[in-house]
Image 1: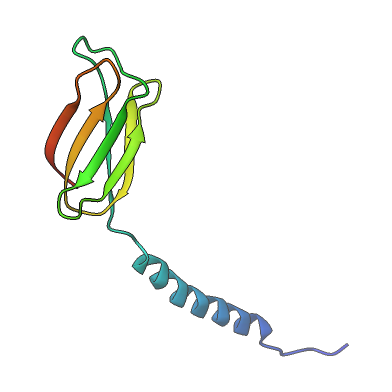
Image 2 (image 1 turned 45 degrees about the horizontal axis):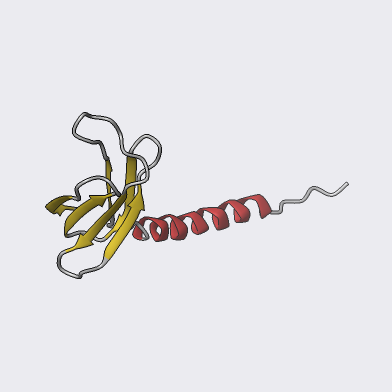
Length: 104
């Protein structure tokens, strides 16, 4: 029987470490500087309003994101670029709600 003094295990470990050194910083640089706006739509008595349309409009770009409230009245507008937004919520039978200057 031959005694192999192969260093395959060391080479494999070195290769894996090099891959990790290059991949980890690449994934850290891929982080996104976007934000979310979340909230709940309720009427004047505090009852939640399901199915309301919520629109966030970036005041600098004019670009809008739209969401609908769920059965609990909650909504989330995701992946918004940083800036100031005007928020509008509306549904038939209710007065439109507007809030200006929300910072993301």
